[in-house]
Image 1 (cartoon, rainbow, N blue to C red):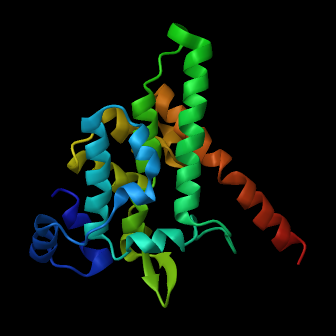
Image 2: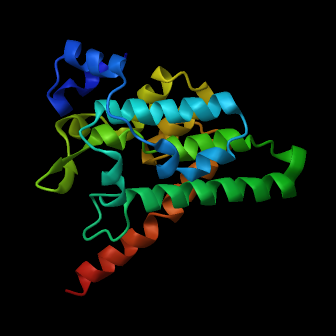
Image 3: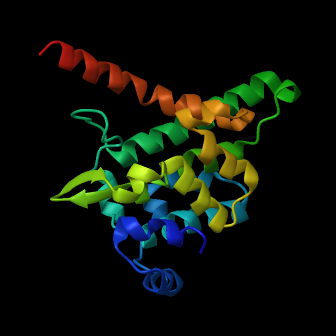
Length: 212
């Protein structure tokens, strides 16, 4: 329940009301439909924790699972043409397959936990469910999001869901804020996969703005 107090400002709930919603199970959502790659996680306990974390985030968010197919993955990129779900699935796939190739080529020289990479990649932006809200059918920054970055709220959500520190670390350090920290190998992989799937769209948007 530690994350609940920090989201009161973003969804207008009192603490007692938020706790009641969380305890009751909240809105039903099929997380496996959003993230089929969850099935690639071999550790069944870790897989269940990843699902539980997303379910908890939806219970505390004003967003619904269907929104992730429609809202842009970044509200900071003008005219962002890619959905939240498409971006995050691509990040998870790129991170996992890159890690698999690296593990095969480097072997014991660079130990990599593939389950941790995949879990971290799938959960990296879970905090955006608290960072964003819908206003007139459009995703905008919530009052919570203006004060608390999704890497921070996401790490809290992951801790509350009982995820191991190795995964919480990825959620906390995957974005630019992580440059101030020492990243694990798994976090470096997710970090670069995320920016591989982000920076080209930033470059395109900047070019389009410059040509107007």
